[in-house]
Length: 356
Figure 1 (spheres, helix red, strand yellow):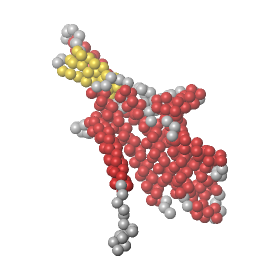
Figure 2 (cartoon, helix red, strand yellow):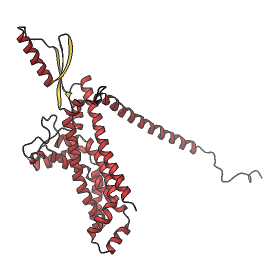
Figure 3 (cartoon, rainbow, N blue to C red):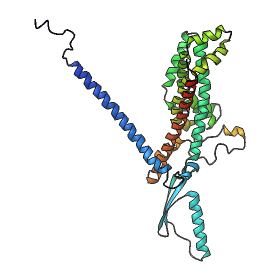
Figure 4 (spheres, helix red, strand yellow):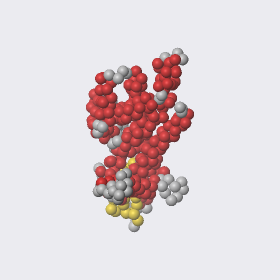
């Protein structure tokens, strides 16, 4: 009788639920550890970088840091006081003090404990401009080529061995390290095509690097558009291209912009490709300061990822270089976030306009 009263559907007491719960907590704690590490890294960049970018006086922005080119910082003692001046101000200060001493008939002034620290004065404006140009140009090329390829694979190509091989190659290219793309761009665009270290070489190298992501996401967005849209358009007498342009692409644009968001995040943060193809450590002129329009495309630029790499690893580290490192990293994060936010807002606007 007691055996009959036992519920056959009751959960049996075994070791497996306890083991499953333990594994769950391990995964949970690992996730929290990753999140805390991310918050610690980005929090450090935000706190220290904000101290460089923002000031306590109006206009509450370090305008020089955001609008000037990088300079060598001179730290020295003169007349019992410690001075920190950029290269231009330092030369002007020395000339002024020497002129005053000469006019007064005194010996030349002595500047004690003069220390020079490269790239630790001035600002990062040329690097900001170069980063924006590299991101916008490479994403424009990647979106044109990627969407065109996705349209062919999704709407025109027949699903045969060749098309399957192409899709497999695209997936494999998405996992290729960025340094390989940098070497490819250096060999193809810089040397073989003779473009040298230039914006054009950087654009195509970065575009090819992000192209697999754009093609895959764009093709998925095109396939997500209902088949009925195509059939209705063709039934009304539209051609294949008119159907794609009017009845498919507008509804796939939010997905295409999603791929652009992913592409911006990768393109903006890569150092190896631009180091081989587009970036200079220091460049005196801004990209538009050229004699001919064609020279604009065949010149190298400064870029924030490469600038951060240089000031973080190629020069002696001290409190002065730390300000530049965290300030440049903070501006870089804000710049990428602004571009990605713009893409998200545009995507949401298009998604609200084209709904089915």
